[in-house]
Image (tube, rainbow, N blue to C red; front, top):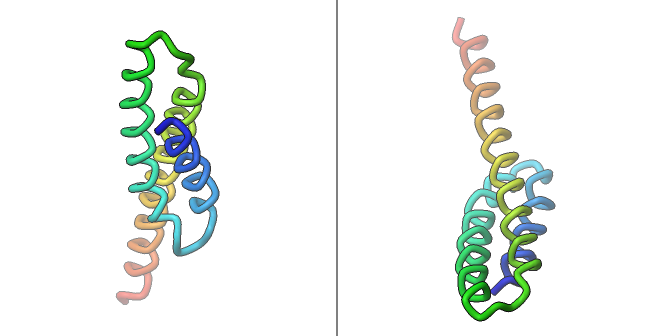
Amino acid sequence: MSIASLVLGIVSLIVLWIPGLGIIAIPTSIVGIVLGVTDKKKLSTTNEPTGMATAGIVTSIIALIFATLFTIACGMCGAACGACFAF
């Protein structure tokens, strides 16, 4: 699951920059965080290395933060442009 978490975090970071598809980064990064945290808990009980799970969590959190900020910014921009054309 840690590999899936890392892959989802990286995919979220890449998809984030594609116009129109950036909204897909939010659910994929949330799934990446859940998978990473679940696997990190499982690996820590068996004293196995948790580096890949940690990397997946970090990349997914970064992608989630940027995706949320970009979505809010685009929404505000769309609202502002809609207000300009109302007159």
